Image 1 (cartoon, rainbow over the protein chains, first blue to last red):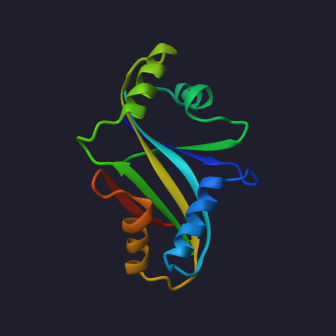
Image 2 (image 1 turned 135 degrees about the vertical axis):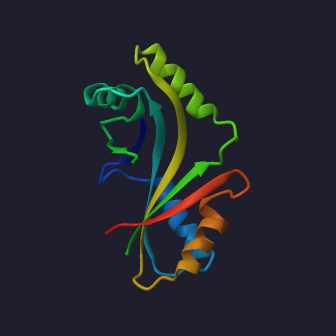
Length: 77
Length: 77
């Protein structure tokens, strides 16, 4: 079973990496970039039948820092 | 216009971060994790009417290292 786990900073948390990219894009001449937020994505291949609770637990215990980050689990078709 | 740009390592390129996560999940008692690949995601807010060519150019020139990484542009609804 293929999973995509997308980890993004919570709104309001400062994102220096995103800001740096935003400025760099401006510097390269790309106008109209209003904001950039950087995040992480993990593509997992897990055994069929892995429970939602187990997946949630993986995210909370290892993949995301839930103090400052949100995560979203997407199941690949 | 909201864009999501997903940058992942090309197949065959070694992913030490993914491997480390895979082992850490095993160590935490999560069985059945067969593979983990780590990637990056950028959420951009760009001006309406930004051309596909400009978006592609941003990816090639700054967001992805196309020697070792693939990128995918997703338009948020």
